[in-house]
Structures are given as C-alpha cells and as structure tokens.
Length: 102
Image (tube, rainbow, N blue to C red; front, side):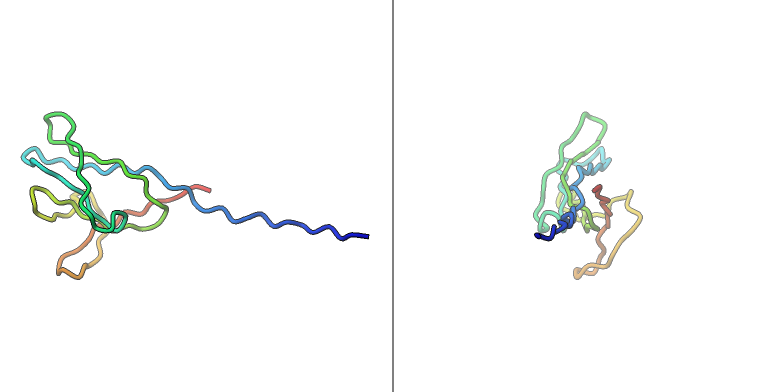
C-alpha cells in the first residue's frame, strides 16, 4: 500500500508594489531619484504641469529602501520622509518601507 505524501504549500513571496514618489519644486529644471532600488543610478522624474510637481512611479520589492532626490545637480532629502539613515558621504538617506501582499 502506497503512502500518500502531503505536499507542503510553497512559500509565497510578497508581491512588488508600484510606489509613487512625488516632489514639489516650482523652480527645478531637472529632478532625479536615486536609491538602493536603482543601484544609486539617477532616474529622471516627470514634471507634471506648471505647478512644480515632479513624479516617478517605480515597482519596488517589499522591504525598506534608501533613496534621495537630485534637484538641478544637488542631492536633497525628501521633505515628506519621516525616517532617515546615515550614509557614507556624511549626509543621510531617506527610507521608504514598501509593504507587500501575499
């Protein structure tokens, strides 16, 4: 008589999430975002309208990510960020926590 083997369900990884980054700067001419999710490569943000709203939608894995904005060549904090960590350049990186769903 054969024994039935019960298969264990495979663990499901959290789904990536579309995350929208928004920066308001009416005087900026070029805005980029860079972070742990881009390998710190600069990714251009899109200017929406004339009100100085810059936006970028990125698909991020569920975890804590570090990032900063680059506005007209200057690295800046996200004014809306609430959590930061020191970086090796003597300043700090912003943190965004992306929660996944299973």
